[in-house]
Image (cartoon, rainbow, N blue to C red):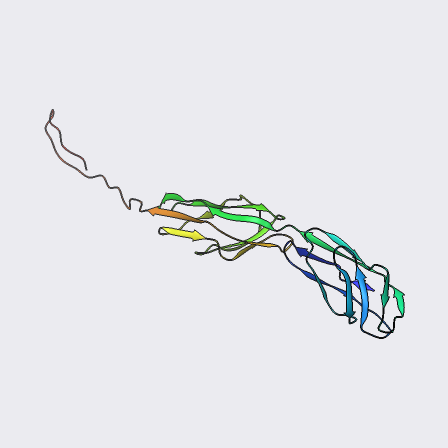
Amino acid sequence: VLSGTATICAGSSTDLIVTITSGTGPFSITLDNGIGTISNYVSGTPIPVSPVATTTYNMVGNVVDANGCSVAGSGSATVTVNTPPASAVLSGAATICSGSSTNLIVTITGGASPYTITLDNGVGTINNYISGTPIPVSPLATTTYAMVGNVTDANGCTVAGSGSALVTVNPSPTSAVLSGTATICSGTSTDLI
């Protein structure tokens, strides 16, 4: 009996297994979709597959044991292939005044939304992120933000994050005090500071 139904990300692999009861091993088995005939197969041995698209594997013909005795193969295994994100790029360079905020943005192409992303410098991990959603930051000093590790989509497929965003923080005035109290004669002037 063939088994091994699984869900993988494109570029990954999984294992099929044929479980054979009775008879004398090793066996000769045949599977479709590019696997072909496997000689000297031992029941339960993993058969690695890396389909590029969702594929259903089936046994073909009979399983033949070491004595030439045979039994019809049965069972099937569907390997679902999910497309991972193609890219995840951080942007949002800006110049702000101290005490103000600005927004960072991660633009993610491909994969299945929502995503899990991680940024450094105090932002941390954001779950259920939708591409392009503003991420508010209020740094106390000029800070460069970058992505950390991989971005993971809803199917568990990943892509490395890239890009950075420099947020320049300019100091704001700390006080503004009017002075210049004076006594003048009519028709003359003085200065306020």
